[in-house]
Length: 83
Image (cartoon, rainbow, N blue to C red; front, side):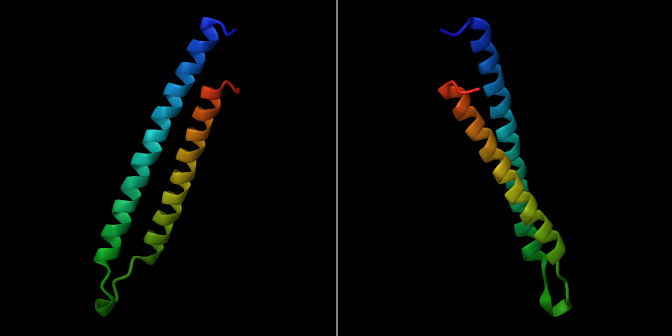
């Protein structure tokens, strides 16, 4: 049997992780949008390339995806009662 205090702290932790996960997902969406914009702005005829910025944003997007996934897994563990 768990005490009300433990249940409250777990629910607070889940709420914090959910908020954090949503932030990561929103940041990832912004990265992907910026990648699309940079790709559309490239012009090989005029030698306008944004390869470094695109690569960096792709790395950030992947990092944010992993961070969101870790939050999701932590939430699942808390829901199952593991701490």
